[in-house]
Image (cartoon, rainbow, N blue to C red; front, side, top):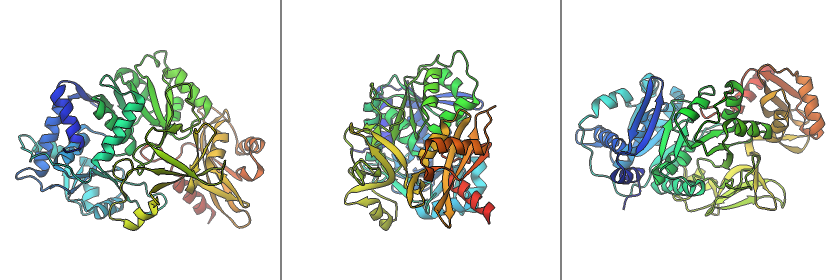
Length: 496
C-alpha cells in the first residue's frame, strides 16, 4: 500500500468530497477548495508534469518548487506525491546563485515557479514552468497511475547560515508520522482549521499544520505571506482554530497591529510557537487574543518535534516542553548543565534518513543512531526542557561560555525593548566581545548606555554586552528568524 500524502488526500476526498480543504485568503479575494477539488487539481497537475505527452517528470524525479504561498504550491506538492516524484520546495527569495546550487545539488529536472521568479531560475540554468503556465496547460490532462511506495517525498534545504545549504530528505513515512503525532497531541479533528501565514516551503507549515490537517481531515486557511497588521483580522475572519508562529512574528503582531475590542472574537483554541518569548509578551498575546500559546521545538532534520508543551497546567511559556510521546531524547553534557540535544528515532520514519547525496554529512549528523541537533538545552527535575541556544550562538568571553539567548531575554525584559539579537565578534584580549542589536518599542526611548547598565544589574560581568546598537528593525528570513550572520558581518565590516 502506498503511503504518500496524495493517498491521505484522496481517502478523505472519497469519504467527504465537499469538505473544505483550503481557504486561500489572497490579495484579490478568498478562494475555497474542497478535498475533492484538490484531488482534481492535483490529478490535472500530475497529468501535465508526468502524464502522456507531459513534461517528463517520472517516479523519483526531482521537481524544484519556488513560489510564495499560493494554492498552486499545494497542487504541485500533491501532484509530485501522486507521481512518486520528489518535490524540492525552496525559498522564493533565493538568488540566482542559490538557485543554481539547489538545482545542481538536487538534480531537479524542472522548476515550477511564480511568474515573477522566471528570470532568476532561468539565469541559474533551470528548465522553467511558471504557475500561470501550469494552470493554463493542465486542463484535461490525464495523469499516469498512482505511484506505489515512493522512496522519497521531498528534499528541503537547510538555511545554510553556518555551511553550504544541504538537502534534507523527507519520506512519505516521515510526513505521515509527524502528522499523526502532532494531530494526536493537539487533538486535531475534522472540525479544526489551521491558519498558515508562515511559508509553505518550510518544515513548520508542512510538518505541523498541513500534515496534522491531512491525517485528521481538517482544513487550512492560507495567507500569501505573514503580515503583522493583517494577522488579527485573519484570526477572526478566517475562523481558524489553530495557528503556528515563531516568537518574532508574535512580537511583530503585538508591536505593529492596533489592539481592537474584538481581537479575542475568534475560534482559536491554541497557537503553536517556537523560540523564546518574554513572559510579558506571552501574557499580552494570550490576553489580547484569548488563545493559549504552546511552545514546541523541532528542526527540519528531526521531522517529528522532539519536545512540545502539554495541554494542561504543566504548560509554560519559557519551556520547550516535555518529550513528545514516542520520541526518545537525551542531553549530552555534564549532569545538571546544558548540553547538546540528541534525538533517536527510525530514519525515514521519525527522523530524516539523511542529507541528499551527502553521505559524509549524514554520518556526521548521527552519533551511534542519535541525531545531533547542535542545539543546547537543559532539563529540570521534572524532565521539562529549556532551550539555551544554538551551538553557533554560544559565545566565549574571557574563557566563559555565554548563551546569546540569555542576554537577549534580559534585554527583552526592559520596558522599552521590543526585541534584541546578540552575537560575538573577535576580541584580541577576551576571546569575543558581545554586541547587542536592539529594536525599541514604538514611542519608547532608551540609549545604549542605559541598556548596558540594565544588563549589568542582571547578568554576570562577563555576560554584559560591550556594545549596544539601536536599530529600526532586524534582518530576517522569510519565517521571521533573525539573520545574525548579516548583523555580525555588518559589525565586522564597519570595524575594518
